[in-house]
Image (cartoon, rainbow, N blue to C red; front, side, top):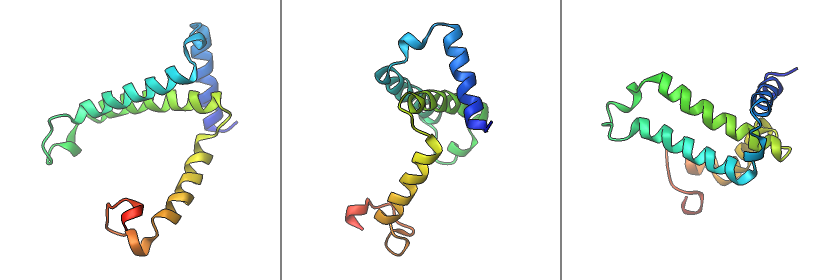
Length: 112
């Protein structure tokens, strides 16, 4: 069994033992991802440029775990494999942001 399937099975077991599936519709999972992402942002709030890379890694780990857990559950609900969809997105982005035009730039693809 691959690690992704193992994690999904653990998440589903955890959720089902608590009868939380009733709360895990697509809308609520998407909102939970957004809320957890805001909590990740909060770790960096008001930090100076020289402080942002020195925040507590345990806090980052905690919020990323929440974001990933809800993301994995949403992907599973829709029959999507997160690793596949990220790979597909990288390929699409490679077309939109060719190295010769995008290297070293933060411009959006339509202004390169």
